[in-house]
Image (tube, rainbow, N blue to C red; front, top):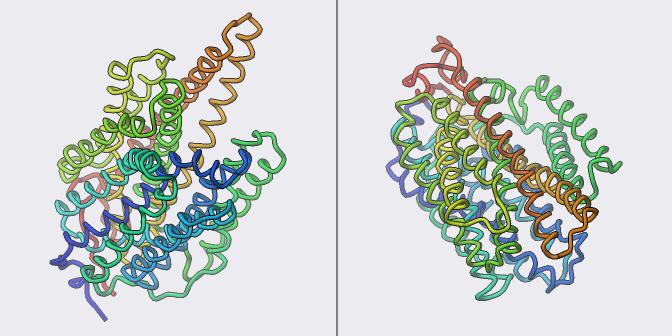
Length: 507
């Protein structure tokens, strides 16, 4: 039986381990956006219909979002290092299959497999950080690096996707994952030493796995279907109803079983609940924006894929600065809500600038400052969010707590893309119809004006969503007085020292 000393002693190779964990996280985040740029080329090469092209994105999102909680619990039961390495090897094989795809079925299957293995490695990566970095200042620095990669990796994916698609071909957006995965897996195998006494030996909750996976898949598919078939489509409505029933059944099951997949103590803590909710909402706003700006720059402004990718660099710079220079430096001195609340509001101001987009808007005068504000705000807020999401959790639950961060990001991303896209499309159609009736003479100009009008209409929604995320962060997170409950119970706290206390848990 191991004591807490095992968990509290810092691992001498933890910084090397962070490099390989960060590399794996970069690969997963890259993969979410790199394929977007290559999609038109892959669609032509494999004769994928317009109706089916969304499955290149959806197959990945469904598998990843639906299985994350399961992956987090597997990491707790089976060992985080082992789960991490297996996830990386599987991801590399799935990527090789996607790069070699000869038809649409093979491509969709490989994307679903990438999602399955991503759901194994993503929570294992975050929970390894949670159990390896126990000192408050070191933890802040480690999560700063991780948060910057989690935030900025998507935009790096756009640059890399544009470069690989233009310089080589779309298949390399899959093959590029293989060296990432191999290096990260080899490094993790030789460098990472998981702390003793931090594994959960309880049995696996099969009903919880089935209900959570089906509930999340139904939710993500409902939003994806709404984008293509409309909100009033019977199957769309059916998916939302099914999701509600399944997720409610999941919560009721978790309250009763002896070894739940998601112990309700992990999410019922007001700090962590506030993090999951505010982070999910912020990601909804961000993902929709990535899509709109990519289309605006390529279709309206006529940028090439590579130039589009580089146009996102100010957002990456803002995220890295916000994460490592503001978030990491202030995280041990300032309560999390005082970083997350203003962070999301700063991002909302950046988003507010983009509501002024017009066909001839200047990149330097409007898009660049908006991106800098968005990046700074999100980087500053992501930083404490990533750390707080696993803080005060018993080590045996750290995998599933990490999985909840990833779940809120993945589900938020899928919802954001579908929800904001649907709002933009209906606003664009209404604009085009009304202006055509008023006698618009240039159909091409009207098409672009309608598109931009749709984007700005949806961006107003994104502004509102970020303001709500800020309000939730300020209201829920760290709102209670310092608790006298035992450490590890995940109680809220108002004091900075207490907030960043590492739990002492005997096993």
